[in-house]
Amino acid sequence: ANPIRGVADHRNNNPTKYLSYRTVLVITSIMSEKVFNVPEGASPHLKSLWAELPKQYAYLEKLKYNQANRGPEGYERRMAHRAATHKTWRQMKGMERVMYEVQHKGNYPFVIGFGVVSVVLLNMYFGARNDPEVLAASKYYQRFHAKQAAIDGKPW
Image (cartoon, rainbow, N blue to C red):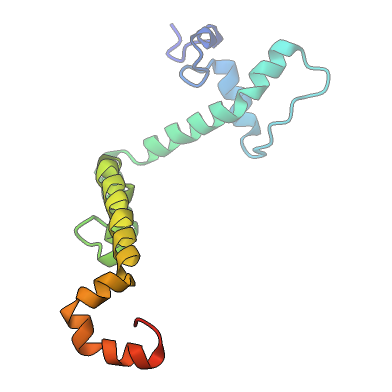
């Protein structure tokens, strides 16, 4: 009744879910090296097991991290670290907040709509801006810019 279930669970396509006792010993013996080179002359079965060692090593590191951060002291440590390294959306200002909202998955339809509408409006603005008929009909242009435009030869 080993609580760490064996290698037979590799059939479930999740090699890191359960580790055999022998695999844990092998991983812990090479943990200091962190080099996962396949030994020369190894059988295909051993090569496949050796190829899974980085995943299993990462899983063991995660387990060690979770174990070290249990309890009220660990919780306080984690929350202090998070408060020092993360901002909430209420603390963000300006473009940082805009980029945060743009990258949020739920806002993608609005971002796409905003982009399409912006492109259409900019094309309409710049397309109609220098049209002579529009300038001739504009009271503002005739009052403030038409005389200088006639002198310079440019509409603006």
